Structure formats: structure tokens, C-alpha cells
Image 1: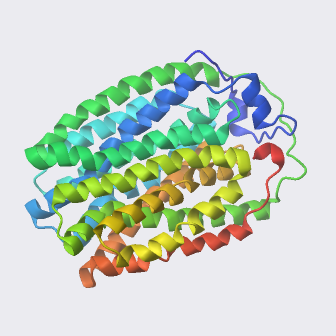
Image 2 (image 1 turned 180 degrees about the horizontal axis):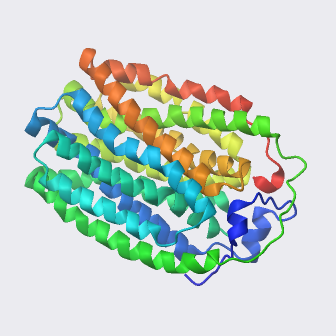
Image 3 (image 1 turned 90 degrees about the vertical axis):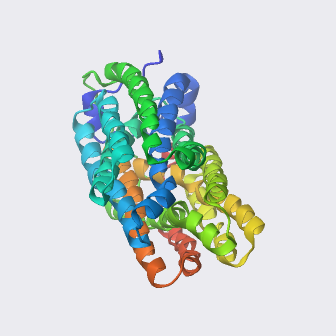
Length: 417
């Protein structure tokens, strides 16, 4: 972690758009800090592995405590609402005063949340444990997204994809670990995963030591915005469009992440462990798609990638509720690869629309993602209780059609792409 990218306090709070330096030139001059990117991506892997355990143990909690789908959705809401509510607040605060060791401190909340979840025997305690894990996520995502950008060397899409790859792969590992450990050994075995949180604390503390020198105060002049940059009105419209696009993507992914196991068990009669493996296949495809999307955005433009990734998944999502088990697995891979490739492009596009508020924008968009996932899981749970899981997937199949709103996204100046 020896490639410093010096950023002053004013740089973090004032609008700075450099018109004469392209991302390619910056990358050529300094290059990405690969060790930092690897460290923050690995931390994202550990963080999201622990988070995905919550959804992966839903069948165990449902059977043990006789929960209905609405109560399952409320667990997801407790976890993701905490993260959604606090992430923009954390991002706004760290825009003004960066906290290099906040990542390690926030991970301690996840550590205690896992321990509490392993010992919980009441529904209310399960909700509190889920909320603690969500709190750790709220602290982690905004500041770690900023660190990924600082370490990018100008290759912002690539850096965001490396960061997202860790999280997506970690999310995919949750069902596998649940199938191998939690299902055979029970709810108490969740405590073993607190060791992962402790490892993440160590890694994030080391990253904090790299990050601290980057935020030393050093006066810098404010550079005028690029003359071709979109107006404030177009920026506001574009941000709303990006939120809507993220809504369509994240709600669909949430429907599969939270209820795909129950869908496979109910429709095809597979075992819980087998269903968790199928969920892993979908989430692993998400991880690959998230990694590929960022570099494609750097090369061809983020707007093009956003168009293709959301609308491109529509034919596959429409077909999913009507095919057999094997075809369902194949379609879930295609959906995961295509729809997840938009995440990095949406986040970097939003950061470039508001370049002086990286932390807040990252927090808002990560927070919206978590909030939509939590609220959507609760609503879909209620819908499943009153109809069926199959009906839920027939409705969700149309969500990628919201990708048509990408037509309202502005064309960014070349230096911001």
C-alpha cells in the first residue's frame, strides 16, 4: 500500500472537475494502487459474505421459529433499512471530515451482530442482530467506495468493479457456507463467522493506515467545471433516473436473493441444500457481471453499459417463471451476468455527476440499493403470502423494463467518462 494519492480536505468538500486530465492519462501517470484495491475488495468480500448469511439461514429460522414470509421479509428490512438510513449520513459526514479508521470500527458492529444472531431465540432479538449487521454495512460502503476511487489511478470503472467484485463474490459465498456449516450444525454455528469479521477488522485497520496520509490538509485551488458539463437541472433528473434504474436492478436481485430458495423448493421439490447451491450459482454470476461492467464502462461509456445491462436482462427474466429446473439455473446465470454489470457504471456515473460529494453520493446509492432490497423483500413477502412465490417472479420479471428510462441520461464530457 505504498502508492499515495494525495487528496486535501478541500478536495473532499469543494467541486473540482479537471478538464484537461483524462482518466487514461491519470492511470498512465500513476496507475491504480493495486494492493489497496485488492485489500478493499477483499474486505468487501468478507463484509458481504457475513451479510449474505442472514438470507441464507432464512429456511432454518423459518422452520425453527415458525415464521411466515412476511416475518422473513421484516428480517431483511431490519438489516437493510439500517444500512439504507445511515449510509448517506455517513457519506455526508466523511465528505467533510474523512475518518480513515471508521471502517474497522464499523466492522465491530457486524462482529457483535453475528454473535447475537447465533444466540438469538426470540424474533425481536433476531431483528436487532440483523440491524447491527446492517449498521456495519452503513459505515463500510461509503468510505470504502471513496478509497477505491482514490486508489483507481483514473480507471474509475475498473476500480469500482474490483471493489464490487469482492462484495458480489462474498454475497455468493453465503449460501454455500450456510449449506456446508449452518445447515448441518445449526444456528449456533453462525458465531464461527465472527472470526471473519475479526479478520476484516485487521485488514481495514491496515487500509486505514494507508488512507490517513491521503487526507492531510493541503490547500488546492478550485478548478472551474467543464463547460460541457450538464446543468444542475439535468444533473437532478439524471440522479433520479439512476435511482430508478438501480431500483429495477436491485429489487429483481433482491427477489432472487431472498426467495429463490423457497421458489425452487416449492416448485421443483429440491432440498434446502440443493436450493442454496442454485442460489450460489446465480450470485456467482452476479459477481462476474459486476466485475466486467466497470471496465466496459471505462472503454465504451457508462450510458451504453447501463442501457445494455438492464434492458438486456428482460427477455431472460420474462422466461424464468415458465421453464424447468435446469433451464431456470441457466437463465439465472444469464440474468446475473447481464443485470449486475450495470452496478459499477451507475455508481461511477452518479459520482461524476456530483464530483464534489463522492461519499454522500456513494452512500445514497448504496443506501438506496440496501433500502430497496429491504423494502422490496418485505413487500414481496406479503405478496407471496397472499398469492404464491411463482406469482412474485411473474411480476418481478417486468422490472428490467424500467431500463428504458436510460434515454434521459445526459452525455457527460469526455474527461468524466
